Image: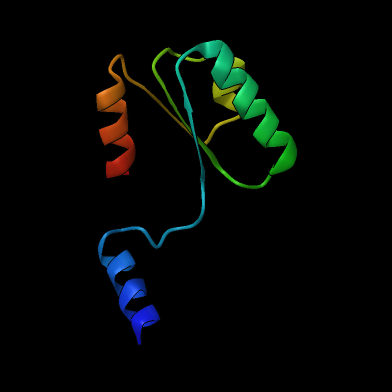
Length: 82
């Protein structure tokens, strides 16, 4: 019963979609290291990159979605919304 409630709540909140790996990085170098590491360990799971600095094109190509914001607060709210 409780499990069904949380499943319904997740669906209402839009949190029932497939799994993704969220990567948070402050710099392009950090983003590149994290994304490449995750691609090696979980090649089939989509990566969403949230970064304060635009990533290199090669790094962005390894991600399903890339979100670059100049504010950490704005980046946080963007991630929560999605």
